[in-house]
Length: 274
Image (tube, rainbow, N blue to C red; front, side, top):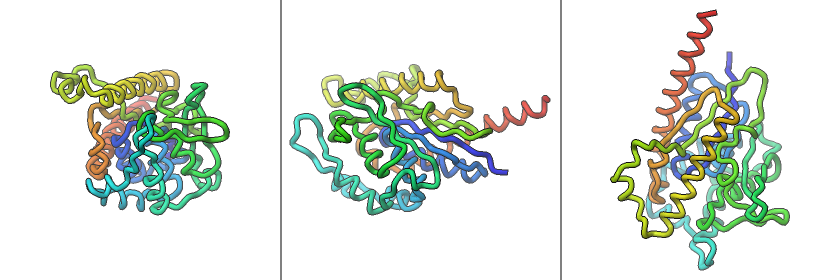
């Protein structure tokens, strides 16, 4: 008997490629992903999976090297963002064709944020890549998206781990993967050396990441998942880590396997005690 999963994927840059391995681990164990909600990179991986294109996306991602990745970066002369993001989205559309969210077989939700009002903007219908592009608009990095009179940026600033938005079905299992965990014991002098305090981009990125960590933690407290997988924030932080898709996916597979082992053992123990 298949066990339905409502899957929630956080923001988190290249660490989000861990979701590929996590999804594959769920499926290999007989779980059925019945719905997906994602933020930023979570909206990307969750979206291409819900559209039935994860295998094609994975094949493309694993083929990236430094040169191919650099060719995706359409740098901008704007004072407010570094990249336009058009080249990246055009490439992904060729790998996984556009589809309307409401036409996908798996219910899907992506979240972005209104730059001016601070409201979260939830995508449940319309073109998939409009939703993804808005959700991944990291402030100062990617150009904000103009949509229906709003200016949208990365949803991570309002709802990093959108547990409250995923569609639920009776008896399903709520599974969340958060790649923004900060382990205070690991924030050593080594990590402090990696974060250049005199580099404004590093400082902005770190502050944004800390906010993601705090919001994700609050999200999990307000809507506790049955299975919560965590990956350290300080792993895979460089832009050059975007070419490590296969390695990161394997890390995600391992983390999901460990979390499911704990959940299944606990469920078995609870069942035998009745």
